[in-house]
Length: 199
Image 1 (cartoon, rainbow, N blue to C red):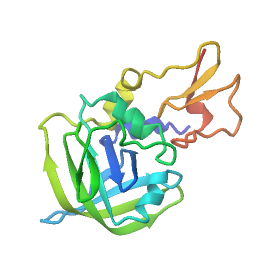
Image 2: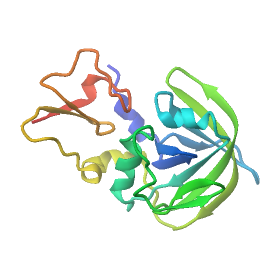
Image 3: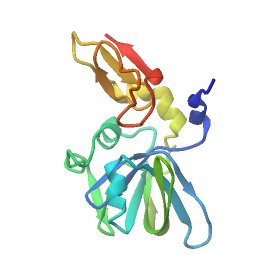
């Protein structure tokens, strides 16, 4: 048996990654070197439009989310594609180094991309911090906290009278009496076993 929920115990956080023309929610962010110009790595799914944007831009920003973040930020940047909507339209941001920073955050890091590493599902972007600041000294949102409080943070609503299957990892909703046998979540890629039926 492989219970991938164990990954929720890894001390990852919840962040908004932004670059020119888009952004998304990420959790796999790490500092990979020290000194005056520390390197930061972030993993971004290949199917995510932000991955495409990062490959034509040389900088990205990471806005660190706190436990008190407005849940609309998670919904906007986590459950939508920048192909379809302007995620910045209804989000308060400040432009720094020509990249939008989320105002409702604990602070930010702007990184210049120095390397990339490809694997089957993600690209690991490695960037050198060129600008950073702290807005608030509050508790950052961990990935574990997000998973424990996801229902109240996201308040997933479904259409009345329709059978819905809700992804327990990211909140994506699929409508239909049954999930296809080989179904994979189009947002986070998990299989049908991690969907919960909601009627």
